[in-house]
Length: 229
Image (cartoon, rainbow, N blue to C red; front, side, top):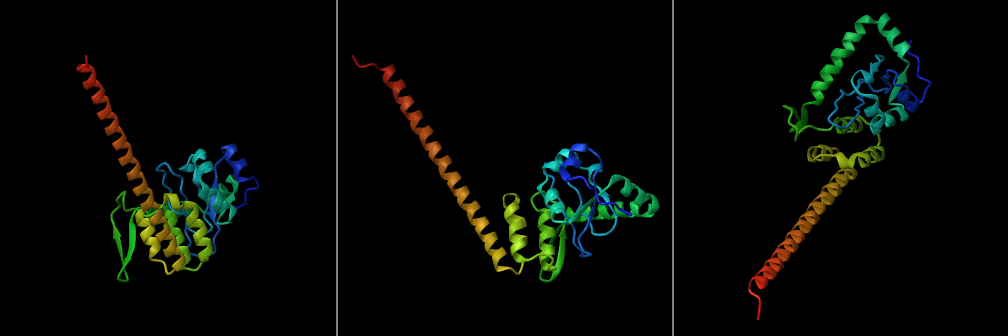
């Protein structure tokens, strides 16, 4: 039997003990995706009774810096269980350890593919750094379509990660049947367009200033070369 961890997340992170979690959601298809930044990838966590040891692959430091991890625990999406109970679970259910390992590997491969809905068919394209969809976006997209979260909750989540959203993430979100999300995508896109234009203006102004200074400097040199008697 799995035993919930009594220590807080911060106490557990400071202890450097192994951190085992269980996807505590009720939906059989709700995957919990965690972003650890710095190019560190971890497969979305599937629902079910099998615990997963995050610290086998993710350093404690990255866990402590992960907003997704803290929020998932705070909202009850993930349940932290004790190291002893998790190990006892797999001693009694030896076959499950290999099964969950294979499932995580499949989920990792799937998260490295871009899945798009085009004319009712699902098209998967090979991984490309510019085309990969954020696991968090995939999770939120699926959760909203399956009515596991409301529109307001979805928007709150998107506001938290809006600076990390890539163009493909925004386009994928635009496909949701939600006027509010479509407006969110439009607003973010427009803000970024304005920022690019503003940056271009600054660069142009800076270039003009440098050009003016260069001309003035050249003029001073010319006057020094030919002094007036």
